[in-house]
Amino acid sequence: MAEKPKSVLLPVVAAAVFAGLGRMVLQKIRADRAAKQNRVAGPVDEKTREWISDVVRTPRQ
Image (cartoon, rainbow, N blue to C red):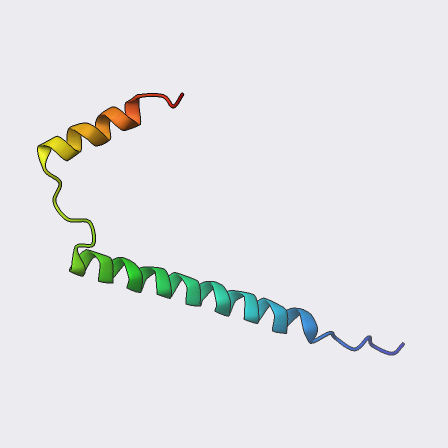
């Protein structure tokens, strides 16, 4: 009985998917490190903190 030829497509697609996911994870890690080092979100004063708290707690109308 002749053996079926094995498909190469599935392993190639799987490798491409894993490579893409790995690349996305590395980009996320690099972006998080850059944001942490650059302190994108600066310190917030007390008045601004109260305003944000009020806005978050008050439902929209």
